[in-house]
Length: 221
Ligand code: DX5
Ligand code: ZN
Image (cartoon, rainbow, N blue to C red):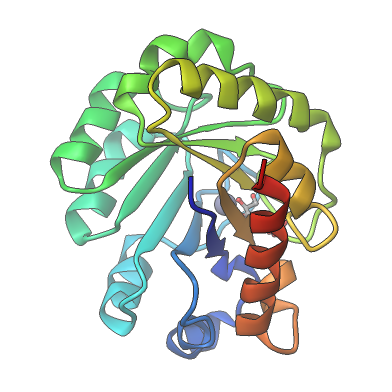
């Protein structure tokens, strides 16, 4: 399983998003945090900005929807051309339908769990999911400290995924940095979101490479 790095533009300069995307040409994805001020206590950007970003970069877009009604809004992000669209378990009322709609619109389907949401109840959904996102902070803001308490769940999720054929990517998001990424990789994560650790660095592309190196070495058996 290859390590992938997904810099979160939440920590980038919103007035210069095209330049900020160009600053990480070695990123596998650009992570876009969509927040509605209801599911989380913060308001960020929506579909029009994602559409503009899609025209401004060739890096695939990884949309993380922290919104109250993902069943209604998620398919449009996939139809617009996002490569991956993730909805939250705590918000989706019809996750099977929504995950299928994301896939049929041509995107990878993502399913996210907050730190206190257990993974086991969703085992039967793994066939509908291309990427499972385990939040390693309470969602809503960049720059929060990493929650070690989630690591046992990362291990259990990796084991569940392995039992189901190993196809599902396992993403961690929140507080991922040079000091925490190795623990995540050892526990079985393979897609790493990093906001402040990338866009807070003097050289964001270098930060992406450093994170990738640390994760690859830690993931090696
Ligand atoms: C938090 C967002 C994250 C955030 C991560 O709710 O989902 O993607 O940008 O930022 P850092 O890496 O700074 O914790
Ligand atoms: Zn995110």
